[in-house]
Length: 365
Ligand code: 13P
Ligand code: SF4
Image (tube, rainbow, N blue to C red; front, side, top):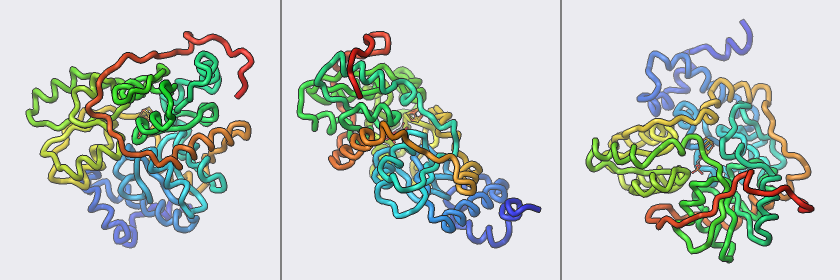
């Protein structure tokens, strides 16, 4: 028997060490499956201690990761802030690649690992650094605010980053009448509905949130009178118009924990409802389920392998690191969290795509 096999046995010792964790996730992991899952959880937790590693997990991770191995959970902004503060030698990002890059930018001396190479993002894939250079060429002098859901080379072309938790405040902090806000078309439209600043957008979409429709929400409301609907601002303005509240993943969680609605629907990635439901048994969750395949490519098994073999290490090319770090650090330093997305008034927004922009002429990074 190999060391790894020995380590993964469900021994009385493993059962004892994981008993509290089992209690937390008992509604999501059937007790017959626990002897298979618990040894993995225990092995990850032991290895973290041995290697002085932390796991930063996004709110979309599955309950086994979120409740049983994560050291810190949160939305993109909270994870970025935590990455800059941790004393650990190793950060394992239980999230997607752009989040791991952000951690590396804010903690350049740490080893940052992403357990799966499949953990991309449709928004990050929608735009390149060259696309941003072409936007700047078309709109000279207009500040570029970039959503963190982008690669480091896109961040490097930007004046500042934002997340869904601080987007409106960051746009307004630019102190100008017109801002380029990249790359999520819907987030940009939802920001534009809340500010007098003119927004120029890019036509990127989150493949999870773009699938929800206002019609779907209206149908759920008809079926369940009194239902409270919370939506993420990567959804279309039509979805937000049909929601009771909209904000970042952590703002949605806060809403449920504070207001305890009898029946709630979180219009976002599936695992969010499971994670909050484990802590709010008095709230009934109605689940319209859209999975993010990138987030779901992270598993307990590949987190364990990541810690064992220190893979896959995230590195950022030298030519973009300074600019990208400046954009992320500026966002963190501004500390501009605190504006949610409900009560917006829809306005027309210019949306650019790769084929609406000309080639770059003499604009350097
Ligand atoms: P937040 O957690 O920052 O709201 O972002 C949601 C998301 O889609 C991350 O991929
Ligand atoms: Fe990207 Fe959307 Fe998945 Fe978030 S949920 S990682 S924005 S594809």
